[in-house]
Image (cartoon, rainbow, N blue to C red):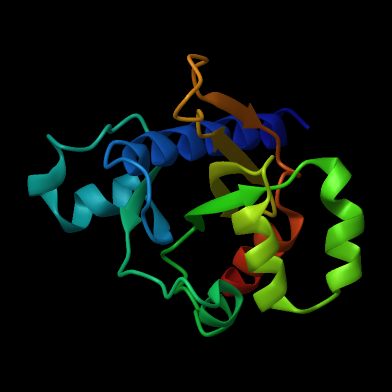
Amino acid sequence: MAEQDANAAMLGGLAREIEEFVGSAGWDQGPQLFALVPTSVLIAEQPELAEQLAEAAELTPIAQEGLPAEDIGEALAQIEWPETVHGCALAQEIVILPPEAQAEVDELGENDEHLEQLAAQHPQRREARLVAVVHRNEVAACVLRLRAAADEEEPEEIVEHPDLAPNLVEALRTTLA
């Protein structure tokens, strides 16, 4: 149990690190995929990176080529990581609707086009950046940064919980299987 807690804490730290890295480029970005590789392996294969990497970190995130924003699930279904990749992460911007909008969402069913339109036009929508991280040992972590509204003085809000995006976590786990 202690080892799983340590792994969960490490992945939570990686999720925050990735969110901060992606956030440093601002908002309105496409989805970004990261491979999580043991830092010791990177340094052994590329010693010139030793000064740039935190040697104490068990895993180092490595940004991958961009993913299509249209259907991330389909793109992830095409990915298989080699054994040297111990985990992966995905950062993406999403729209969150308030619980009161659930009836409208249920009414639309599986119609993605109408769901996107509802989300884009809903007066209480919140934009957010979601980072989901998974490890081959089944541990996961998620971080969500809620974007502050342009007319609000409140700071952006951060929420962390491994169950924030169960479907995304499962899709990422499948890439490691």
